Image (cartoon, rainbow, N blue to C red; front, side, top):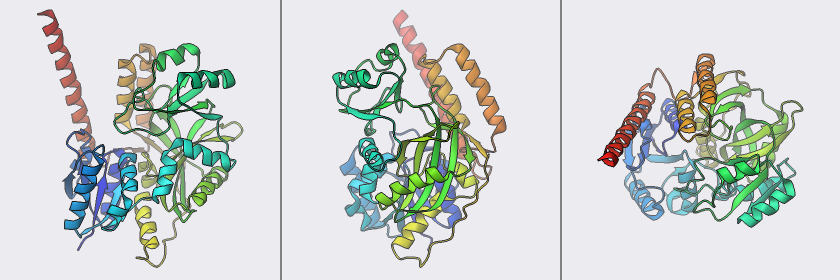
Length: 412
């Protein structure tokens, strides 16, 4: 009987997980929630079943529904969480769920530390890994105190991304001047009691993707972010290239995985000054990276490796495969959908000028032309990408019709 794996959360890298699992010999079941419109993964040819479930914000209902499913379905061997929302939920309810099947994730304590940016920064500081000057702020008084201390520019970001809460639609806010601070941070965001304030340092974002077993990194891949879906560079990577592994960054990463006794896949990001090679720690994501399609196309299959280390940890296999340390460099991947969406959002919210938008458009064309691979597209599995564009087109049409309807109502 073919074993099933329940994949939770629908993101662009969910497609990489589905394609990897299917090629490894598993039948993926994809979880979905009716109120979430990101359902393109459901149309993948590799999705064998769909499991409708309560939202992650209804933690008790979700956990109860999941336990009920696992009691009925002994053929579900593993749960593979893709995003941080379900990762946190599973970590908090680990003992209730893990008795029924394996969960492909690091230990709950490591997850809690990594997702809490304040705890991660303390760990990084204690281990003497380079970190921008960082502090916790809980009020405007705290922020003003730090401004007097470190000046401009600085960055504000949530300590933990709260499910359902918005941080002005961004991962973080860059304040280069007092005017930008007032413009981008007009009031304290709801549902966030404290924030991280960091001195802004210059550099290029490098992502260090890895598989670790009991703290030892056994597979490693680096990629350089060329552009993100936000004009100021704070968003999600939409144009990246594989790069030669850095001994310094790998050593820093392994210091952290060893301290956390980390088993599983993850991604540690650094800001790198390419002139002198110096770097600063950025964040530790205890999950599959959103750009995992790039290493997958380069022959580094992190979803499969995640299952390997879990099976070895549980004693289901006697040894781990020897993963190759070599992968092709200068291979570029582009996420066209995210690129276009980012342009439209920044234009709509007037974060960029029309002139900047035109420049962005030509960068989209250049990235599309020069890409070795495309983030979600596969000739063997084209439907998810087509569904993604169809849904976005319907959203634009619906929004336009609603605007016209309101305009006519206002006139009458």
